[in-house]
Amino acid sequence: QVQLVESGGGLVQAGGSLRLSCAASGSIASINAMGWYRQAPGKQRELVATITSGGLPNYQGFVKGRFTISRDNAKDMVYLQMNSLKPEDTSVYYCYANIGARDSYTMNYWGKGTLVTFSS
Image 1 (tube, one colour):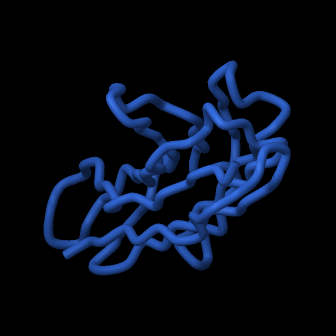
Image 2 (tube, one colour):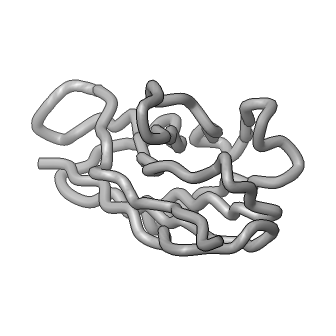
């Protein structure tokens, strides 16, 4: 069984920074692309950034220059460094990974999310 667990969310002020982490665990044979989505209250889930197994990142326009995605293949982890945060970045952030499990086929797995909120 494969699990993704996010951490690092919290309360932040405008212009602040947070670093989200996501750890994959379980019966993993291989991890392909990993990434982050987010879902704001009353809105649909949207893609934030992805990173290939080789470390090539891709960002949505609204986070370019502010967020950095990275991964540690040895630890089966993906990170999202978020700088210059804005109130509109308030969301639940979800980690996902395309994983080939040892006892199953390759599919996308999702974490349960970590909340990023702003203090006034």
